[in-house]
Image (cartoon, rainbow, N blue to C red; front, side):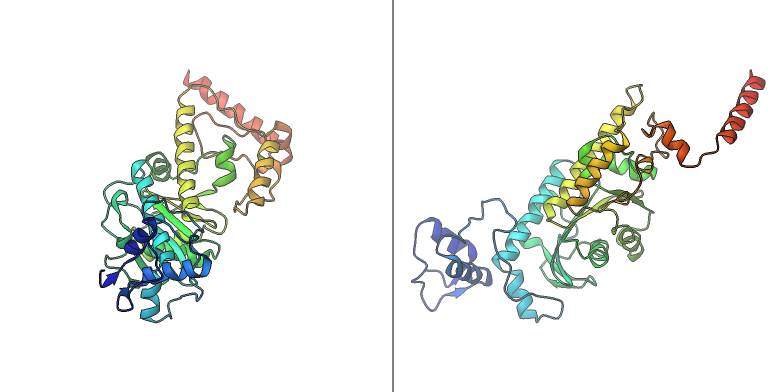
Length: 352
């Protein structure tokens, strides 16, 4: 038998039906192998078994009993970093990276992802590695100041933005940053996509635009963090998109899919030559109630119906679906509108 037994070795023994009770006393178990054996002992002989080929599944492996933080010893951090629990999270990061790359939401080595694993500590993706080809051993462990605590490869250069989001928003358990083309187009134009069009976007995403700053700089992270109390998806001007989730890293990724599909649909709609058919304010109010029940932030929670569908910045044929009577109730001066119209008519007459 090998002198050193790894997690892969013990998983292979389980698959082959071999007993793990009679391992030689002189073998050295890696931290992740010890964690695996401990989980099997605590939860029963079969409950902790999993193979490396199985897809990562959130919640299948319990976190260590003793929480870790930036003050934990180097040995404790290393044990955590090599544990079965951390391996599961690393596999999730790799899985989300492959999805981002497969959908062309990232190019080159762009994009980065992070998962909170303690009060002031997070796992994150490495720098200069394509998100489509990451391996669990590429992942990094950092504290909330950006200091790398574990991992062979260097952590992403944009980690400060993820960490500032987590500092500002205690509910954020995971963050995802990438460059989906249609959404990034809105970011370059400095436009928030119009509302009142598609239910999934209204329920799961809450979008704002952060001004441009150099990627990876503290200023960029601060401008994004300033928006995360009321928004879970931020368009980064001239750069890309970052999202956070209070559920999981997969949920943070889902927001990217929803936003990108929505932006693409909006641009297609704008090319059809007819005004978009938007939802009514009461219909949107129903969706916002669902959103609020799911614990998803939105600055429109609590607004009156006549304030919900504000698409003033959007130009291609989209207008608010609020009935005219409700618009009058907001205090618009009808006499001023008539005066402006009269002046416009005079100017057009002179031009002719």
